[in-house]
Length: 209
Image (cartoon, rainbow, N blue to C red):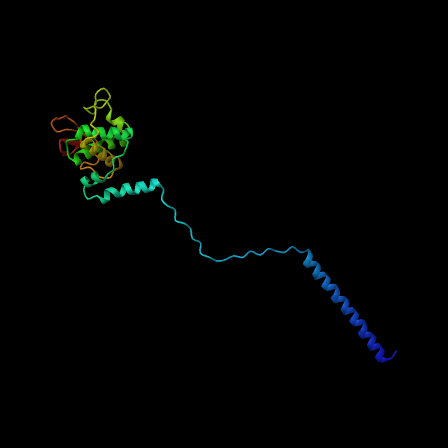
């Protein structure tokens, strides 16, 4: 065999081998492409997250407005004038307003508030009944109580409207009384022998701790 023929034969065998190799590799890649699952691609868009500002609940808004009412008023008279009397009173506010009305309706607003705050202090003290009605109707405490009942009230009078507003202010603690913290009082025309600490006289009542 001549040198040229052997060279040509060698080239032919090499070309056949390379063609076969390339053909086999291509089929394997194609098979992977068919059988392999296609991965899903999730696109993330970078944007600022804006959360809506939660509105305050009605209870929180009411508490805020009540707390600010006393701070906004320049005097007790102004606060009383701006305080809304409820359309209907709970039993507790009825008892508180009634006690203020019968004990101090002819006195100044400060005197009425002082009486109201004593009833509130008693109800919160743990030493007396824990409700305003319990305090007011406790035996031998208030002289206007007759047979576990209050006398009739003229609810259209200015005095009653003031007593209701003072009751709301006393109940919510919107204004301090001149004798804040007092737990007892009596009319100035009597002189009971009490072993208690006297605080001050407001109008026709003397208050004690």
